[in-house]
Length: 329
Image (cartoon, rainbow, N blue to C red):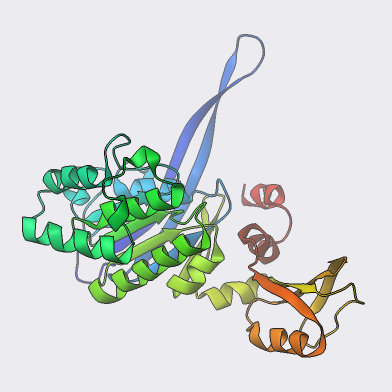
């Protein structure tokens, strides 16, 4: 790693796969799919960056190349000066990975035994292992789960267990692929607070892929958008909302059915009985709007819904996902 090179550095990185599909009764034809198409970016040590995009955009493929699971088809990739695909074992001691859809824990073992195995595998000094484990157990509320087999844990409990497992060996960089997928509100909050503390106290570099824009808003100062294998945006989240002209929704439950709510700064979308939907710019705070609605209408409940990433990207570049795909060919 050169003094001027970012901690994570991608330069024109590509990844193609050969897909075979049936073309007639017997014949099969081969087609090349470019999952990642010439991506370049750098992440400095200690940054917490959101890496977002629709399903099939190339996010997970990028993460797998950064960990050495996949080898790039072209371009240059370095993590802490290491080529992940050539020195995967050496890099493994410096990174932590959490894949939301699959676990790194041993299915039939209690959490405690899984952690002990990782203690031996990574050769973590005993004192450091105990300190890290105690910290993770405390902040992620795992105390009552240590003796429970992984297969008996709920998704939220297992996810918190996976996050702890990824951090026992003090990784310098943490890759999180959908870490809050399927979690309840309480579990999401615990994971987010833990990640904030980890980044602030230890300066751990974090690359986060997610479909939940709230994860990005609460954790990341920078966001990158990938769509169909290409980097489409790299900057602040507020800038993404401005470019995409995205909107949040205020869902208002009234005591009774009323005419459409008309308040400054919001656009009436629709109503179903006593429930109404109001849209407002994602770059604006919801607080003044909530106050205005509450002051003039009999409320039962209200909530704010974040814009869908697909919708943000569609507004940024126009058209449907299929139309955007065609424009990139």
